[in-house]
Amino acid sequence: MTRTRRRRLLLVGGLFVGLAAAVSLALTAFSENLLYFYQPSEIASGQVPTDTRFRIGGLVEENSVERNSDDLVVRFTLSDCDASVPVRFKGTLPDLFREGQGIVAYGQLEPGGDFVADEVLAKHDENYMSPDVAEAMQDDQGVSCMPTNMQAQR
View 1 (cartoon, rainbow, N blue to C red):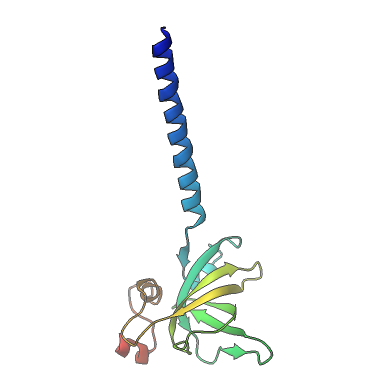
View 2: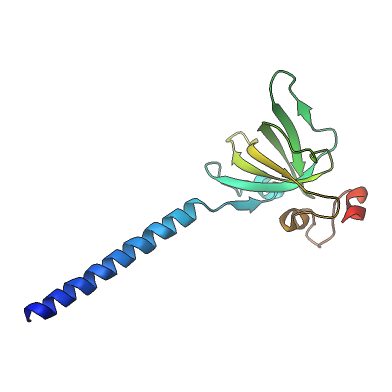
C-alpha cells in the first residue's frame, strides 16, 4: 500500500468513527429527553417504571382536591375510566385547574404509588382537551366516561 492510499484509508476510517460517535451521542440525548404518556389505569396495573419522568393525564376527581394552608402542596386524584392515581403537586396551579377538569401532569411515580408532579397543565378553554387525555378517558369499547357536563363542552 502506498503512503497516499494509507492516508486516505485512515481519513475515511476516522470519519466513520466520528460519525458513529456523533450518532451515538445524539441518540443517547434523545432517549434521555423522551417523556412518555401513561393513563391512570396503566399506573395502577404496575406497567410504569418508578424511576423515570413521564406524563399522566385524566380527569381530576370530584371532591379529591386537598390544599395545605401552610405551603403550596396540593393533593388530588387523577382518574380515567378504570382507575385512579393520587397526585401531589407543590407550586401554583393553573387558573383553569378545577375538579372534573381534564389535565396533564409531568412528574415521577414514587415507589408507594403516588405521582409527584412538578408541572400541571390544564386545558386552555372549554372546547379543547388534549388528544392523549381524551383517549385516556375512553373505556375499552371507545365510549367516553367523562362526566356529562364535560362531554357537552367538547
